Image (cartoon, rainbow, N blue to C red; front, side):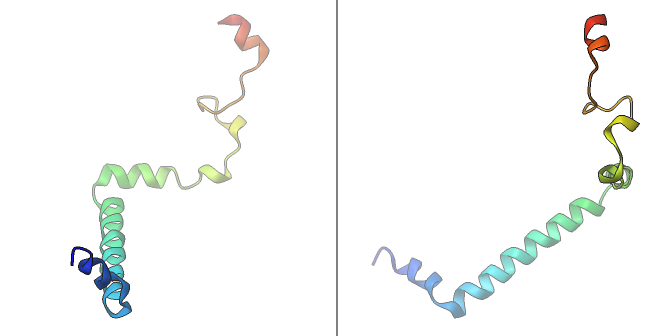
Amino acid sequence: MYYDWLMWFTRMENSKPLALVLFFSAFCAIVLYVYSGRRRGERLESCKYIPFQDEADTPDSPFRKVTDDERESN
């Protein structure tokens, strides 16, 4: 029948190994993406302390609060 191949996924002995292979390959792809390339590694290393920084500490930050004086000068 047309939907017989869908029944193959409903059996646990077929779907569990398939899910394992899919998730493991996704994990390996993410690890390779993160650790390949020196420039990407340097960028990620520079971003690791972002959660601990205060927004007001960095004047170049695109997320800093703009004061009324700055709005009027532009």
